[in-house]
Length: 353
Ligand SMILES: Nc1ncnc2c1ncn2[C@@H]1O[C@H](COP(=O)(O)OP(=O)(O)OP(=O)(O)O)[C@@H](O)[C@H]1O
Ligand SMILES: [Mg+2]
Image (cartoon, rainbow, N blue to C red; front, top):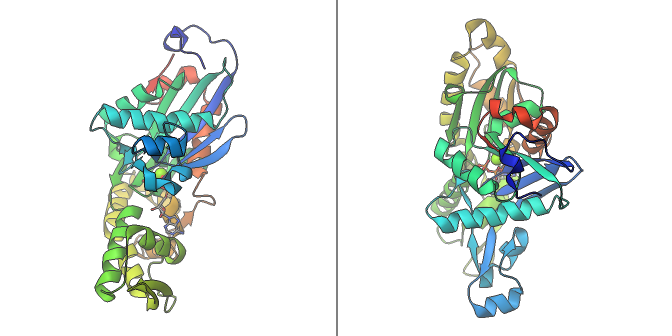
């Protein structure tokens, strides 16, 4: 990677271009490269709490699942909150840069590579937040373009015209209407009742029903990832929890349904607004092209329940992407490879060239 002025001038760059697609998520960051890298990293950085920690770790910091596993002697920092960079201070930017530097390192760039990255951000990330992300990215890549997460999904699926993408992540649900152009602010919404919100709701709902069990967000999240559903109940969902240190079997079917369905009204309401914003002659096509993406798209029954909420809209098709972990990221890489970086400035906020 080059740290000279080349990236900020019109001068053609020498060496090879390494193209990257990066889906910078609240819970996980996915990276794919033009040379075949395909990895996810938990979006967390750990720093030793004290000198003993430094000795135990043998390094000033550690990123990803390994940091989470060693959390007993580390200060864990999550650089993203509700899908966007935490920006309370310089320290937050440094944490984000440590994560980004690590993620890009996974793509093993060569010293003279020109690194060009397309980075997904929530649909309605503020201008200021995109600018700080790009400023931070500038330290680790030569060129970077930020695009909205649902747009990346649509690009990857070849659904850039007359479709609606709903990306259900940990921090945000991003909904975007695709009209064959770069989506503008009026085409997209970001909602903050997403996966983390379901975890909180589920924890509360289980405690309400079984006040004596021990619950935390990790346990709630694990139950959700295994059993999440909306709509028709599949029957009792018995899980083993702990009460007074002993295992107890609890039916969590109702709490799961309530927690998962709690995010639906806002999603449906905003989908309706975005559908109506298409020209009337295109709306029936849009309704047949509704795509669910992100980790939350795996909630059972979601496509059916969403479609049922549009039962007076005519023919409605809701589908899920096949690989919620990588579909956004692979769309970003596809964009990076198909559109020459010199045109990226026409697509959105970028640094380089
Ligand atoms: N099978 C599942 N059912 C329901 N939810 C799931 C399932 N698997 C993962 N999730 C949830 O999906 C969320 C993670 O999705 P994803 O990786 O798309 O988010 P992210 O990109 O990190 O977040 P964001 O886009 O908000 O920044 C988490 O809340 C996770 O618990
Ligand atoms: Mg995401």
